[in-house]
Length: 378
Picture (cartoon, one colour):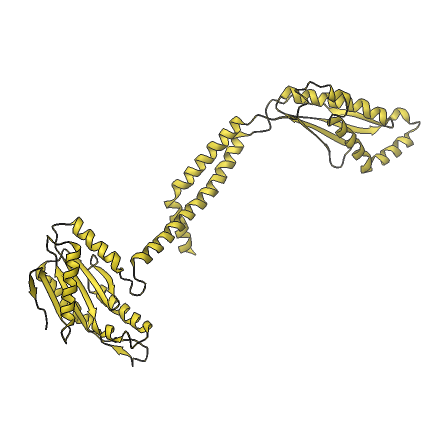
């Protein structure tokens, strides 16, 4: 759990700039949208429905009318009547200024819960317009509804007020929300970027690393050889190819899984005997290549003979120990000549390893220059 948290924190640490950038962009987009969005103002008025005392002869009738008023159908009827007036069905609304009665204004009516009070709300781009529309609708509704239902008194409880600030947009609130959304999106992008890099590294590793031995592939090894020549034109290095003759002879005899196990083990031994900057590659089915940068010619042959000694140890290929292969390493080594190209060096090392493999016993053939051959047979 702690390791996972640590990985998440490192991902955020590497991708913090993405999160900040996305948050900054989101905030600015929100502020620009708020700036170019027309403001919307809102005002509201409230109406109450109550018994009309003038039409009743005694107080008991008033009490009965109050009980009747508790029915939701009564207050909902008044709501529909007020809504009808609000939608422009009355002459007063139809005769409004065309600019005020345009589609830019919206009107809604709701019943206040557990009461006989109706709320009329008007929204629009002009604060004066919303107040005028609310007043006109209210006046028309009062006259029309009171004539239609004289038993109850429909009266205004709260007049519409002039709105001083718009209800939309809200730049500060929107910017805060944009920052939050930007942080979430930015975090997702940071983790996606990390995942893409991880996938890219895995694909790159597959392209340059042999899946069996974990050594470099031949193509990548040759690329590193060329880079060594270009980057250090005057530096010396040793290039060797190790042919495991014993493994090569077993390719057609043993299962492929055992051949892979043998190559994996000799690669591990080889890496353990080299310096950290030395390069190991898979040259062929039963061959490994070695590049020793900054190696002196006097130590090259000694180094490879020491390596050969460890690589010659028998390898146990199964748990019972009854299947053993002797690697029989034959090594061809060349040192760099300043006038050689990478292709020339490769041809020389092929010649050296071919000579080493021609001997009956494991041999190291060291070609110090293109013109001098030193036999390293023991």
